[in-house]
Image (cartoon, rainbow, N blue to C red):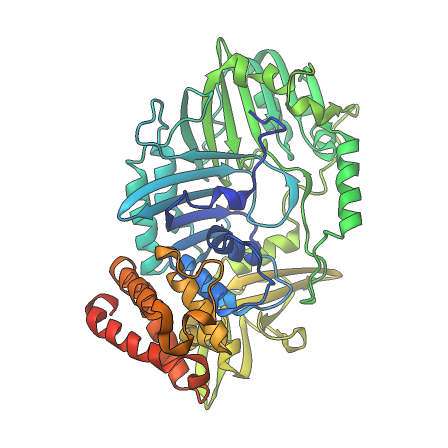
Length: 597
């Protein structure tokens, strides 16, 4: 466990097994980068990964298809402002659900529950981790649990089912019926899924912390204990260290160790990541200029570095129990926050404290990354990076309220009025707002929770609103997803059609829409298949794929029908869609009209 050769990428963990596709996915994160959310369906579907960042029609179709079956819960106010607005964001609008800030805490779990399908057969996967859905370059940990019908040792799913079912209750604003049904359906099938306990562990369960002052889930006593946590608080650290009757080890950031020195002083060893490791990270970042910049006017986007993993190990006799997930070793994590941990128990020789820290050359473990940290004589006043600043707290509270964007037709354009309730900012705090699709020069002052933008083009309507909170010289930018009132019917329908500017664009879109069925649209897909009056069996192949898709996934053809209707209203439709394809489509649609609505 936690060996140097056991590395993984989050996006790889979300890729479907061979021959299957994502049927439903529910995730949680504290902070969210919308670009990272867009990357999930692209990584899961487009094997080549050769996307130039442009929102092409085929990429938009892939995002649309996966977004319709994905719900992601994140802390309200913790969505970072992307460098630019992208049309693809239209399709993840209904995927994002902001969770209100629980009293005295934050919404902090990191988990994905994914259901894959093929011909009506389901398979589930659960990822429990310390990683946010961002592009942070930090050291994190993830546990991947796959469904195996014939598994000898299986997880106790009760905790994760309870957690998923509870998620809609944390939403800052009402979830849609579609979102509610997806969460309920996924939790129902997850309840009977046989998730295999990963080798070499022998048993496992989930420990959800639902802001109920649950307290630490660890054993009251153990032989040896290890805590890996970037953030600490004195009482929480002392409580964990005191469970060990023999040795306790704490690994954390230097600032956290200094701020909680009195809480970890009873530990046998106090460790930090080696300076050489952190120096190497900084050198790589400086060399390749990996720090993201934000052209939206909100300044550089904060990216985490160094230690971010959260892992707790307790040896007890011949066994050791490991807790892995989102919770830091702080009072808030185990009392007021919403968190998720997974517990795994296995032989102490394989997963115990010594197996993770033994410095012998044969051991491929954490000992390569850590070094002793000298503690100060007394705890320092605070850890500058821990917790929320006062301004961040105000921004999170605003984002946790009711946020609406009311649209009113103004000829070919739309007037947009923002409403935020309750509006209870302390004196001296001001807020400006703009739609994410608008330039920074179009930000307006929010007065008593209201702001207004006249004559917005249809293509720039978005529920994503940038809020800029200021007090004194401090500035905090947050992104919120408002509830649209009076959303134009054809707004979402027109996005893909607007991205199709040529016949090649149309072919690529069709390949993305049909490609998952019979390999249609794989490498080599191009205009040659459609030209020459459907010579060479091309029309037969397309017809076959249309009929297979109509039978297995009729909703995809509903999307194609909407796109074709948009294209037929354009003067250049003959240059984009072959006339023969219109005839073929009309025949397929007539046969399958009942199925595709």
